Amino acid sequence: MILMITMLTTVWQVSMVNGLQQKISIYDPDESIVRCRAPFPKTSLLKCDINSIRNESQHVRNEGVFLNTIYECLTIQINNFRARMTRLALSRSHSLTKTFATDCYDYYASGMNVTGPYNVSSSPYGIRQKTVWCEMSVDGGGWMVVQARLYTSQIFFNRLWRDYKLGFGVIGVENWFGLEDLYTWTNAQPYNLRIDLVDAEGRKAYVKYDQFFIEGEDDGYKLHVNGYSGTAGNAFGEEQESKRENSYGMKFSTVDRDNDNSERNCADDLEGGWWYNACTQAKLNSPFVMSENYKVGVKWLTWTKRPLTEVTMMIRPSKNILKTVSPNFLSKT
Image 1 (cartoon, helix red, strand yellow):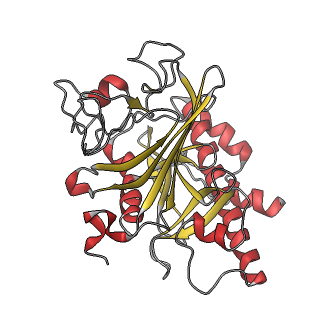
Image 2 (spheres, one colour; image 1 turned 60 degrees about the vertical axis):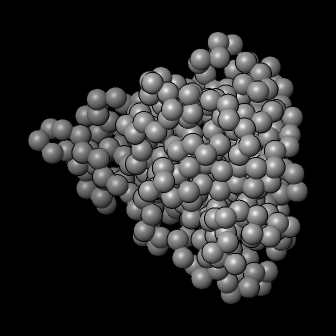
């Protein structure tokens, strides 16, 4: 345990260039995927420990942001470590084949029913590996979390296009999966989408779609859903509907890339990236505001105007649906 803590606390090195804060991308050496960004002061990598991080934090303009970023990065490393330990245990017990798990359902089907971080791949051959959070206890298990929000967390969601494309946050706490990875996974096979909602009074509701995928970046990561069921109402809408608040068929928008149908920038007004139309009945990436004003806060307006305090979006393979359900899969069958 001491060795693990030492490894985690010596990963972060901070450099100052002409007295200005410099951001350095952190990569997982095994997976070559950007995990987070953190500001780093001028400290030797070998000498970087909790005390030196605390001492150097005085050089950072916003100490709260600095400490929160360190927390994010360390937590990600811990989750990666736990995921690798899980895979090692599985290998020793011979519960997996030599192929890679492509999603959380593969682990669930192999007998792993503990919610937590796991390593998955976009193909059985180990291409595009990623550490994800698997929810194994809800609605039959095997769900891969692609978005999580929690009122008590302080992770910032009003981000630029590149952040939403690559993903950000802390898995198991509050995070965004990444649009590019979401496109990769949902175009490899058909997926279900489930969204769990909790409001300020503790009431719970859910939304489920039998079909879910998004298009690629050249098409703005357009949203496609069909086959609604649940208790919160169909705020996304479906192909046959044409409401100006529905998200079906809409491109993703961020503060720096306005793809909505409104005269104003919905992502800027509502302070979070989303599949906005003009603007939306669902805004799950906005800041948490404890108000029943429909224009502010995290809301799913086909259910309630009450502010939401917890949101989880999850995907799971549609094992019982043929790949021909969507034109997106016709070329792959």
